[in-house]
Length: 606
Image (cartoon, rainbow, N blue to C red):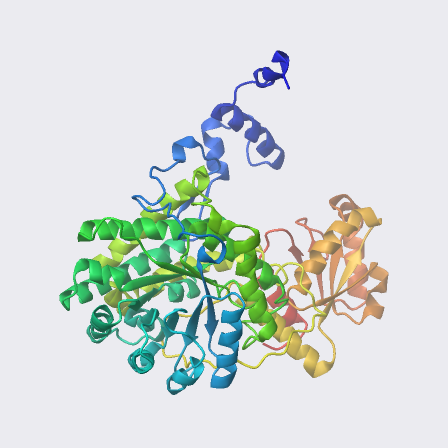
């Protein structure tokens, strides 16, 4: 088919695209919001839209080809890694986590996973997990030379490693996996002083006797779980990795043998692009360490990605399926070597067969139906991802060097340097969550007060021994819901607020929806009706809902009507000030503060 010449010239009919023209169009939009004026210089427009991540990594308003990064897949600086050969499940290791303290239950669950798509096993052992003595029973049906086994035993790492290696020797098989030694990660979790020299013996034994087993896992999730950002997590992980390299080479291993003994574990969350960039930056950073250490060319970080615990919610846990799917997609696109999807009910207790199957199948669908493993570096060439990868790597390297100047990660943990840094990052995120600038669907937005949560057996927990704090993004809203639930259980009804509507439906619907959504996020039931219906509602607090025009005409009279009917406090959905109105709720207000005050005013105990 011949295309007429006039159609080939279609692009010529449009003005050329350039940065200043784009800025001019954006300025026109920002004028409507009041964020800019006609006099705002064009070179200031992008700054009005730019922001930083919680740990200070810049996010620009626009990325172009100038932000692309050099490098080809599989070559330095290693951000664009090539997937293993093959398709489908060969793309990455589907690693399921198990920690049920009953050995028979765990054995059956492991077998079910391996028979239905999982390719390796991650075991939580010791206090808060599977008894180390039960390891032979748990692994009874596992071919140790085929399915990698990753141990996570904390303070009992030595005993668990000996049990695993002895089991392999008894069977006469060459095991594959990781012993999970991570004394610095244990120090981060527990506050105990890290002792590194003892675990070097494990690495030497692996090199000499079990060449397909690694001894060390640099687990960066404690820094993520303490509220840290991506650069915080990466910088601490590199510091831990370097500390282990020093110990291993001092114990007699070559540089290449030492690098071969270390695997990294990072959290990935529903911030898709940030998670992709984090894994790419991790390879960039570790390649730089390998370069200055004199490791052989081609040394690259082995990365295990696990979906974030901090992003998971107890309420409306079904939404966690969406969060983990996005996080898993990011892990695959970012080039993780192994991926673990946490079950959607992880915050409720020990997972059941259904939730483990959903977690497992999330990966299977992405591998087999979305074909993620058939593409080399799917994010490569995205100017945004390339620039974010580099900026994240630079920020993480700066944090790593700060830790090194403080004497290394062990000293930085002991002195409180790491905790202070993570705490500052967490407070910035916590503030955004409270103001609902970082919304949590099903919790801070669109809550379901009538939900019936799945019943799960409580998961065993380790005692708090003074390590880094463990936070969740939604913890403040969950605490409010807990107050409301306790009140409901004690009285038979939830606390409630009356939404007093003014004017026609079109005038008040938007703000009624907004107010109901906000109050229900704290477990506060809402009753809707005109001010005259307040007395019959049984509520003691009201919130006026309508348009600004109607407020000008009727807000003061409506507030007086509510007061006369017994309202002890009158809120207003909007920013205007009117006689008789005590306080206001609006987009961007501190929802946690509003809800805390409301529950207290309603007599709901903490």
